[in-house]
Length: 219
Image (cartoon, rainbow, N blue to C red; front, side):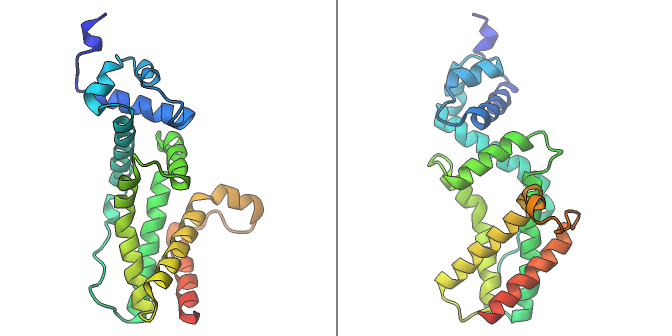
């Protein structure tokens, strides 16, 4: 055995994470073994235990890696702190539009066709959105929390009479609409042939904000 196969080096950790990303995306969590990941990375399998303490730790680090990668692409879209108290409905409307724009930018960054990580990352994201594994639930929750917090603040500013359950229902509906428009453009074009695939994210944010605001007003 070559001693370099079992000796940690600066590039080894990233090589294992990138190989794991490809394996988890292609084969799924259950069918991906430590040996398979190590083989794809061209490393000794003992290094996975050294760096990640096993398969669960490796899976978590794959998601940390993706979150860091995509967060860097939206670094200019930092979430603002939500208002401490309810503001006017018109202020809420402006905040709502800004919030929707951030959601659309976030989804667009995760599914950018020019990103080399797009295909494997997309598979993993969609899998986790449908059935989150316990290994990464806290990571997903932490990433979603500021968006949820801001959505609640926007909706409360527009409809301060809403209960917490009503606010959460509208927040889920809002985020679902944003993700559907930003993520399923190609699928939408198959059925909604006049939808305008060239619509910019800013124009989309305007339309979604108007639609949501009027829906909240009339509730």
